[in-house]
Length: 353
Ligand code: KG4
Ligand code: ZN
Figure 1: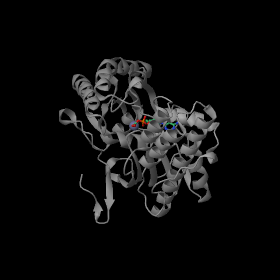
Figure 2 (figure 1 turned 90 degrees about the vertical axis):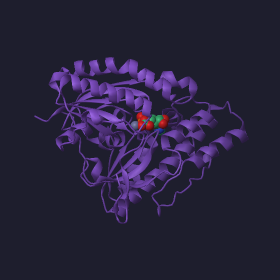
Figure 3 (figure 1 turned 120 degrees about the vertical axis):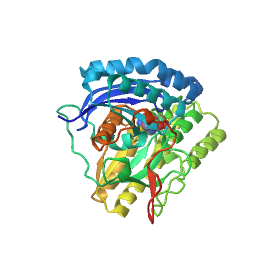
Figure 4 (figure 1 turned 45 degrees about the vertical axis):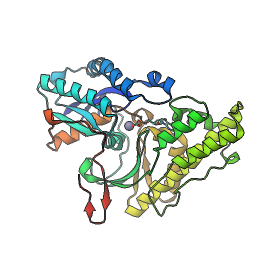
């Protein structure tokens, strides 16, 4: 029997808990979004996020255990996101998980949120096992807080190295800011995705900074500035067709850069499997563009279902189960920090941790 782990996630604006086993089988997966709380401010307000996690995590964890049909005594370990993220929000999840693990006498492990996103492609429901990528593979992680390319040799942080990353905005952040400029509300990614579907991407030209595939570095703040300049020039248009065209052109440009970068990374590393992870890879143009380009090079693309692209605790429970199996135990020593453990590969070897 693979080990059963309770996962807890509170790094940003989702309070989440899940019960998952060491094979990635999901028994319950509860996510309580704070989007409505932060929407009036056009972005996540850290202090409000922490307070809401404090209110939500208890009921969310109880529901996750109930839906899985288990009690805390039945799980083999507790895993919690302890990095990176909003530190106040992380502290709430870490303290709740410490208390639970201590009271139930279970091992506690901290999980890097980015490792969770990278491994979310392995999650599955009973009887629903899809084809899986083969290690080593290349992963494009694109979320609201991070955008980077990784080489993943094995399913743990020590075997994952960064190949390139954004120098400025994360992709999800660029989507959110562009949507705000267009008056579309928060979070902007899903809105741009939907409106762009009916738009004509060729009617507006955006230039993509650092688009050359000679570098795996990326930049997305410039395209957001181009949206700001366009809105300033044209005025806040009331014409929905124009807004749809801007959305279509914006996501087409971003998707094109990301697709070319991740394919270039796979070719450079000599790997055939590409994995996508993080909230922004829910974007349909990005998925389609990556699959089409990868197909031309004989590469395979694996994408989690949309529910597992965004923040969730199932990915944390699964990554935690693998860490427990490798002997990791954090217990009372666990701290919360805004920094990821994933490091850039250097010519001399892996960076300092
Ligand atoms: O992974 P995630 O849930 O949270 C972080 O770890 O940041 O990612 C959230 C981000 C938001 O910026 C949101 O606008 C973006 O993912 N997003 C999308 C789509 N759905 C969510 N961006 C583009 N297209 C989408 N369909
Ligand atoms: Zn995330």
